Length: 147
Image (cartoon, rainbow, N blue to C red; front, side, top):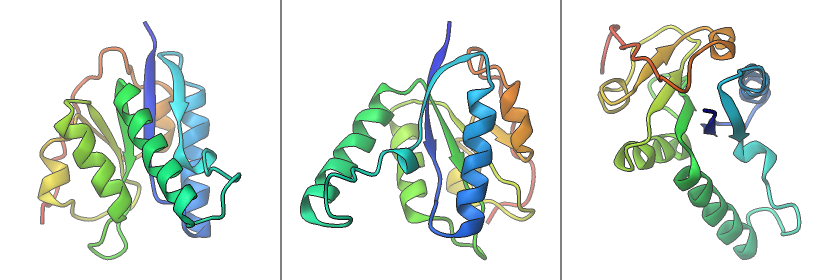
């Protein structure tokens, strides 16, 4: 059985783009996945970026992809104590839909309570995504500092 993953991640600067590309590569190597939807790769270039049509297509496309996902991978590397609001929203939507969320956080530091508690697995090394069993979705609790 292979799972469909929705990848929630910021991709607004060079560091974030480099990180999400590494996550995409690791997920592509995972044998328990049939597909990965990364919003970074679905930017609706047929519309003017941030224009009305683009907004509708992007929002609806992302919602549809989350609804079709079996699992979410959420990259939550903070800037200070601030996580990307889009990633946080996608995370909360997945939790509300009972979709398991695998959190990836490379940077050391505390995790917000509202992400640390409902996550299914907490991963700090992106290469671990290559071998994580998305069919079984084993629990890896976050045991660090919560804020």
